[in-house]
Image 1 (cartoon, rainbow, N blue to C red):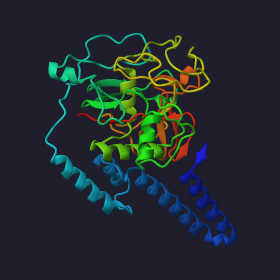
Image 2 (image 1 turned 120 degrees about the vertical axis):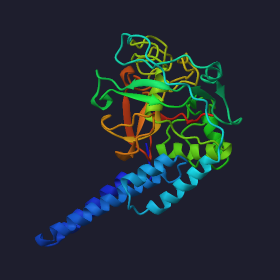
Image 3 (image 1 turned 60 degrees about the vertical axis):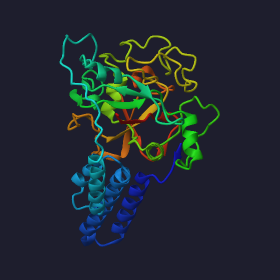
Length: 366
């Protein structure tokens, strides 16, 4: 595990320095030391939030910073960026065809969660939902995910998966058919868009691993510049909606892990507990996505929160909470099947690399 400029370490150092300095002062200076300590912590928290969103092409992420820090150090710059992005957006006349949010037409199936609703759409819209495309030869293969509604979380499992809440995905979006591969990451390295070389680059069809959330941000910034499209990490809600593929069960294929459906410690595959599997080694889910369960934990855009209390209901990323850590989904090859349930959540420091972490990309559609 590689630790690169970990902001948590910096915060701890500042706190320790402040505490030691206070101990050397007279008792009457305790309140001043506490005030300085709090100011230092607030500085690092704001800086971490700003660094997470400063290069975003999504105005909502910059607006989230302004909401949290209306008089922050970077508020003027955030306002300039928001105005520029909104002006750019107003010049784009082409709009995504919307698949109408569905009406529930049947009772919930047997399982822990509610199903994703899928409604009959006009032929033109239906033809686009589920389509696959690439924006360039080196770009990830993308699948179009339809708009709709689903119930996010689980009332039967861990506290961080509660409360169960309804989420509406208002427009179609596109997400990677596979986790980003070694070959795709290598293209970013060759063009100097990425500066981290993962442990192994031997097999281009393996998912890239040992990458931090910050590394993933470098990749999506490079991909956005290369294609002119707004690539990003998916939100937690988008990830769960896409991973379920319309299911209401623990895994997209059912409640039982079964045999050879995914790569985890007890999944019954040839890679169990040994390594990640090459992309496309198992069946895809109904939306055409591979390896949403097992293989590698996948970074999302969201900040870490210990429950869904106050979570967005529109599918957008949750950019409040502990933004020094970011959410991951999907489990991994070296963990048991319970870790790869559709609703299971995990968080990790945003600037720390770990051998079980990878990602897939998303972008608006079209």
